[in-house]
Length: 601
Image (cartoon, rainbow, N blue to C red; front, side):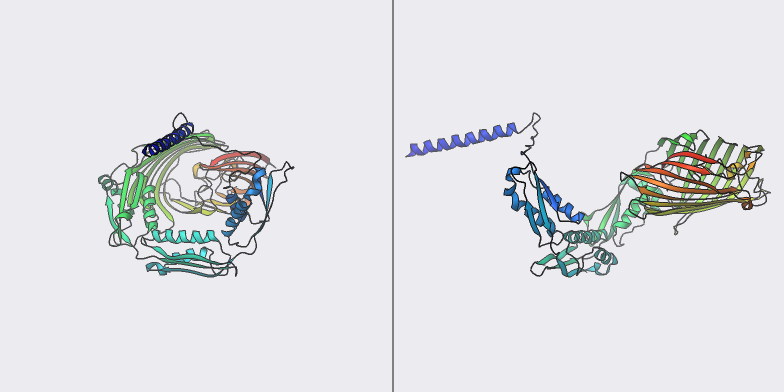
């Protein structure tokens, strides 16, 4: 008997050995030469296509198609064997939107037909209504308006159609808001949907206990960060013991990044080290490069080919001083500028800067060399308005038509500005406002005058992909010497910025046939952009108008209607416009092409 057992065991060993060899051979065959598994792609002959019929809602239809896409390839001759699987996929997808009583009929192609299309006729039936929606927040967060807002915006309430997607999103939003506000111990103590198919109703219960809100704990810096944070200490607006808020942390992080002192800013709550309802905050900064360079090349019909080279030193000293400069050149203008910035109470919102600039201009009837120096104090602490108080000295050597001059002007100035947009480089809504004022008086300078420029630009979106853009611009020179100011402060119309259909700064009052520049300019634009083709493409129709004059009694309105094309990229907007310039003094009609690239705001 023992021999027989031994013999049987040997047979079993050989059997297992053969199985092992077979598995090894299978594994080797399933691997490529670099030991990576080769995917076994199964293909079937005459695979079926499933077509939906009867679901009008695009979102629901897309969801059903996504579920059906998880089915394996099904051969036409075996399609009927998968009838239950197809129906189950459709039914499950419809459940997500509260349809629990669908009627589904599947039509299969006949054997003698060449078609491989399977048609699913779907009657979704009546959707389940929520009979009672109990959504509660308990704990310290019970009275926070932010939770109430999330619940109201969720669309999940009594006497509405049940939507599992809205239910899951509301759960996720509540949990995310709790963490954002520092309720790190929050949890759902009840979350379920009770479905009563016979009554075609459902009850939703969501109860979230926020627990206790945590506070900011100790601010932790490494040795390098302790030194780097010195010029930006005023931006650290969080203190130990204050209620935790992710938004507060994000605001501080954005403010530190805005200084351009740092290559990276990492502010992280160390939730794993929370203790006594406080969360330590780790702040880690990496210094920006000592020298930053930028090079750019562009083209516009106003200035033709133009290039720029910039050199910046983001952090000159431990006190946060910075330096920036550039040289820019085009066919009509060459200029260079250097700025030295000194932070006062806030490196982003309250600072001094000194500006030195040189500009050479040579186009149309203007030839000018302008030297500029100015000292500025900028602040928008405690206000949405940026205020710039400055004292500027300018010396300009010019030829304007038949005029020549060498004026020196010392001007006191005040600029206010505000900008709000939504949507990045392609804003859906927004506006920008700038009002710049300069004053000079004889005795300490060559002329007495006031120079003012007011610019307003706005955009709104009638639909998701359409835009309406409007611009208003008003400039004026007033005072006893307003007609004597140098060309850099006179006004000219024409070009892509204010009057398409005319060449760049080609329109103004004239003296003996040559451009002189105007005391006043009033310009406006209305433009409608509409989708064409791709999501990132738009067509445009627009009307520009301008008056450039020394006396509004002798005004002439210049018009520039036209059409255009816009391509929105992540770097800016490419604009191609064809405008028809209309003026009266020469009975002129000008067809002009304009090209430009850059942000609209």
